[in-house]
Image (cartoon, rainbow, N blue to C red; front, side, top):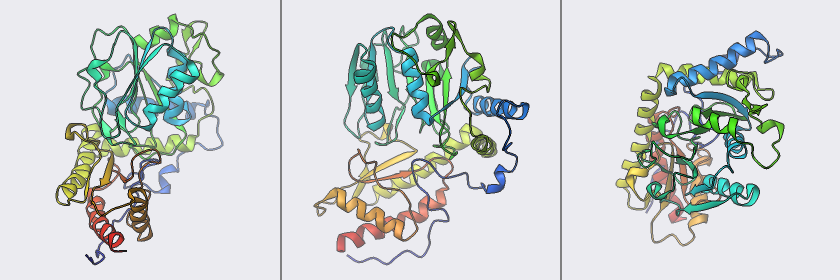
Length: 379
């Protein structure tokens, strides 16, 4: 079968799952007020950091008694900080259904070597969260960035749990509803859904997590960059803008712009609607083409941000090579950049659909995907 190249291209072909597309109205001028060459501990720096924290709280509707900190090393740094500082007081339930969750399992099992139970599911599926022992600490991702599978809700997490829940929400925050009463520790990076510049993470602690920090000392040494307490008390400054190490005020300014843009499109409600519309356009495309399908088995757990797709045509003999070739064609035409599946995931495509992506760009890209598939099949 031969197909003609579509006439229309996306205005923005950036569909990478991280770092993700900038807000549509972003320009370099957005950074003009960054206090470059100034100390982040000067009044202007503290004010900017505090504004980033409190605007995050406002948009995500995070309870007033939850602590929000800006920490180094993206979501990875934030989640590692939480694991190394909080785990070990009781056994852990380690949950993984994709690459990043598997990484947290490795840390608990091989590095911290704590008492644990591991729960896994194959790519495209999800662990039964109701089967876990919530008297233990539970470590999990909300959205599987590399599998396109997310938690549908937090109903399985009991309100009267004895252990802590540690949630990696990096490709869910600002795109999905997070039940704050079910999450004791939450982490994400602003390079994901809001398209901020990389290398900074967000760490959110509820009062139960703070109580654990102040009543429990891990048996292993903690590097300075992970230390959240001093003299048995929480270092409260971390959660008001006095960061552990020097942040990039350029990145903070970029995040502040993204937060204001998020408010302009309706806050969390608007961001969720934009992601849903983007993902739905792809789901409809899959419904109308029998050679491609969503990797997520259950429609209720389909991610609306990191939409992962698999090719299902029986004529394809080498799935990995075929998927790479399709992604290469799309990039060569300048219509979809960085849409190959994650290196540890099944062969296919991964298309970012977070709120900074315009639905019109998704809709313009999909005919090109149709063309690239058939062109590669005929090659």
